[in-house]
Length: 274
Image (cartoon, one colour):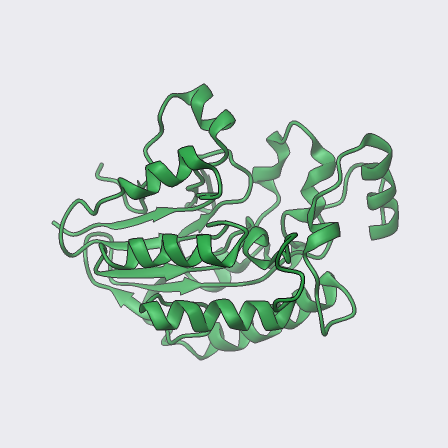
């Protein structure tokens, strides 16, 4: 029987992770796959991974992570900011991969019917560390502790003046699309960054939470009738529940992380069998 499966944070620039992706296969010919961001940093790696997966699964859905949006060393002359995101969307469409810019599709298999909603929302520094009431105070705490996200160097918001301004625009556009969808079908909300603050409470370095989401999505799982929420980014694969809705982190993570857990299942069912 076909399944709705999910993964994220494949980071295929690492040879061990690339080898795992090379071995990914659907469990049945009708399986759909959600990829919740951080496939890789470099455009050729991202294209290779998504092409590989699109050639094996009946449908693939992609939502960008922060690493895809980086302008890394060696690609400085390439697209950045919104232009890079649009380049990635065009790449996905050429491969048959669905993106946050495409019409939503309905999964009719086990757990369905549900509307698959890939989103690109970014973050706005509102998951602040204790003692911080502004972005500036939060960043100061992070710099003092030495825990500063690499996004500050490589994730450019052009033409927006800041990442939080880009986040605000993405929130507005995504709200508009969600409110126009047929409300009779429940949703699976997919975003690289968690929609609620709770998953970040277990971070070893709590200062990092300010690069992990926005308080403005705290009620989206209720407002948009989610049957499940799929996310990545934290490299802490687990499921927590809020308001009866499972929040499923599906990340693989870096080799040094997944080795501690043993070779992990790269794919996770969005709706596991009871």
